[in-house]
Image 1 (cartoon, rainbow, N blue to C red):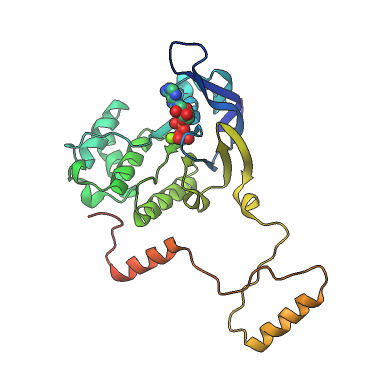
Image 2: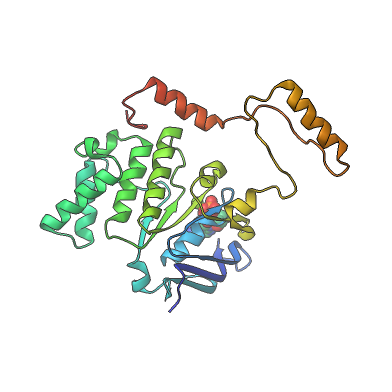
Amino acid sequence: MSDLAVEVKNMTKVFSRGLKKSDYVVAVDNLSFDIKPGEVYGLIGPNGSGKSTTMKVVLGLMSPTKGDVKVFGYDSGDIRARNEIGFLPENPYFYKHLTGKETLKFYGKLCGFRGRELQDRIAELLELVDLESAANRRLGGYSKGMLQRIGLAQALIQRPRLVILDEPTAGVDPLGSRQIRDLILKLKDDGITVFLCSHLLEQVQEVCDRVGIIFEGRMRREGPLEELIQIEEQTAMTFSGAKPELLAKVRELIEADSGATIVEEGHPKTTLERLFVSLSHASNTDDKGDEK
Ligand SMILES: Nc1ncnc2c1ncn2[C@@H]1O[C@H](COP(=O)(O)OP(=O)(O)O)[C@@H](O)[C@H]1O
Ligand SMILES: [Mg+2]
């Protein structure tokens, strides 16, 4: 029995595009990576790089052309693998005339929940995704961020051990994205393994333990986030309250060392996103994310 949540080994997926044999596209090319239980793993890459295809193979929705894909030790095509997975597709489709609560009831019933157990599960999930106040509103009036959150609740109904999220924050405004990221971190706290993909690099940075960078179907870099974004030979120091004389002394010391140079100097910046979030928190005390 494997002790990995996801194991992708030399996976290739080729799509034929027409009747001619020569007309095909290699969507994923000899891809290998592992996801450990409890980890948040992010696959990042531009549009068309093979992220959704990789997810569909892991989900068992399509079989690989070559290679092996396992989920908790089972072949990804095995129903026992599928039972462990919750999935939020890219641009999920929902019945717009159903309310949030009715939507969860519909999916809960599909998963075999009934009666009291179903009611309790729905209440628990609405609380988790912070949609209790919008539970009786139709999805037609939900914002993109709220739709993604109800989609996430739907993916969690059957208590999966692995959750797969395809572009969970695409098209969601910064506050809504933050709520989704906080939710992902909550899932991680609960020991759920998360496999997400995104073409929005900054959004991956705050939640992922490990990241794979995919381009034209091939893995270009892979590893713990900290290692990937660290600039090995550089060191940054941030001072508070340093007077110009002290800074001049520091500069002198560095210039006197033949091996060292100052690459950058200035005031540290916040990210635009953090600034946006702090400003909107200040102007909206009873903040409810991107709800209208
Ligand atoms: N069902 C399909 N039939 C033919 N080509 C496909 C199919 N699904 C994806 N592709 C092609 O495979 C490549 C990778 O697509 P995809 O996995 O959706 O990328 P991403 O999710 O990274 O944007 C693209 O060139 C896309 O056009
Ligand atoms: Mg995609």
